[in-house]
Length: 316
Image (cartoon, rainbow, N blue to C red; front, side):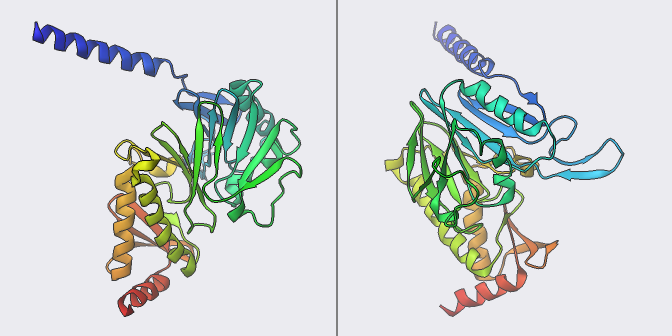
């Protein structure tokens, strides 16, 4: 009897899991975009498709090219929806109508809010798709948009550190993790294992740090992020948490970015302070000349600045 009950329970669990998976829509292409579901009411949008895949590929002319695909995330609540980031600016004439279509097809007549993880062009590029759309309201981090940007007056609100937004059954909380930019913002979805991090901690192939001061901000930012997640008052299941970055294709062979990734990032920072971090030379530009690495984590930074940082830590 016990064996029968155990088998029955396992069968029910399997059926429930399959039913849950089957309830999620399959990935679809809409113009130059591909959309898939992370969980019910939460969508991942990439500016790529089968003709123009993410990362390195051979185009129709036989040339090797790279699509540095930038990702967006759409969270749909009972009352409203939040679109996180606006990806690269695409020259494709189908880009604007396609992006608007895929968003409004999924949110219906709900209020649309748009936010940005940080002030870089590959995350604000499709602003023209919604700048003249009276239905769209913008909710952006003040720390990264002190000068305003090109967001429409009267429809834009700048939020401060720790702000939240309630979409109706889905609440989004924010945390600033500086380093990549001074106001890089991470978005937590309450009751979910999903965290949307933009470029704040990278996407698996190196968080880009553009200055010495930026790295020092990042050191504190990583500690703030770990402390926030581990704080039981925030109700986050650290063991199941997944970071959805701004460039999913950069994960490479990593199945996901999880807390091990973040803990590896902390260890890598400690190794940089000790002057023992391993690295691969890079040729992005003189400022970003090395990929420092430990475990699953990478930081794309500068060797001279890393030496200076280690000397500063040693002098304390």
